[in-house]
Image (cartoon, rainbow, N blue to C red; front, side, top):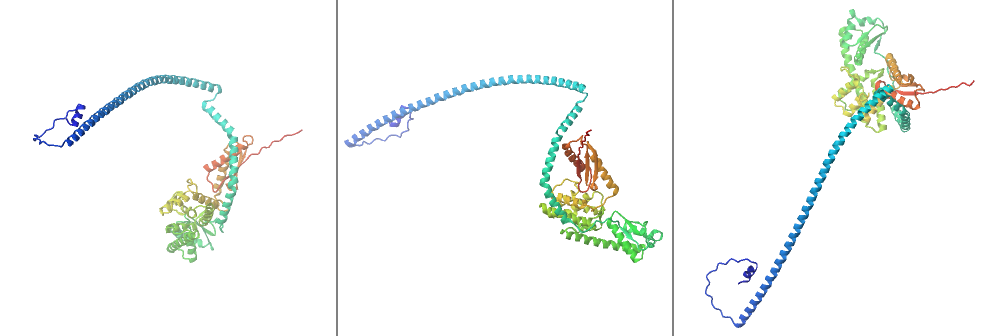
Length: 506
């Protein structure tokens, strides 16, 4: 038996028989005695070594078996421990679930009790309010109104003091700087002209020429009115007055009439010829005036139609103020403000130049601000400039400091003394409206509009309003004037409270 067969027998394994070839007859070999002894000795040693290996293998197998059994036992113990913990956890969860279900039942029961008590409280509250209303003789809304008024009265003094403190603090930091900026802007915007308070009229050297202007059966005057679109008034002695809402047509009629009187040939065909020629001449004058205005204000590359429209400013007056010279003044003031405040001067300059362009577009109806914005948008004027034009009368909320600068410059130019005149009846109505608005407040004894409607002085009853409430009254009147009235420039509100006490000693 070989070594491996012996080892297989030890571990209980059977080695399948090997197929063997028919053995050849062995030839007997003859070895010397020394060689036989050495071979026997090696064989004995190999067998000893094999036995040692077998014993060692058995020991190792036994040791592995023992380790495996130990690990298996530990694994079983761990599984049992985990199973026990899981059972404990499941029991705890089941216990908590039962407790939660019990709490939910208790909460539902408490909620029902709370709802019932809330309903009872509401009923009791309603009954008590009804009793209080009967006792006090006041409804709930009336009592609430009285409470609000009492609270308002209580905080009026605190609110008045707060307003006074804020205004004084703002004045300390803002008055000096604002005064410097405005004075410098006005100085730069001063122009060497006096506003024109005139109407279109033609003076006559000879009263007899009126008959020639009228013509036979009025044909000449009819031809003039037809060609120019202007009404001719010949009732006043020594002058012929021209009336038309379009200042350009009125100017064309005036120039044409003067030329006719100098020429002496006043007849329908000559009238038609001279009016056409005068119209071309006036158009050329307006174009040059528009170009001169743009160059003076350093604005270039405007569309030609916009420049031509600006030229119409030459013959347009607003409350007696020349629109051409008003535009120059506004631009000079606006650019000065922009330089002082670090604004975009190009936007302010262009906004000031174009802010009133809607006033000379007479073939459309509507507010001159909207007409001007639509016209400028059609000719590709930038959006920031359109915003300045749209907001220069505060028809919209200000969206940029440049728009505020244009609005301020226009207000300064239009509201300064002697800049404009107004219709007397409209002027008186505006002053009366300003006084009535101030008198509408409680505790006001008298109100007087002064300084051409740019200031209103309010006399309050000292018994009805204290000093703190007086400060609040000034703010309230100011806010109402802003909201409800239309006025040029600004309106200053001055509230006066004077308390006099006297005693007589006998």
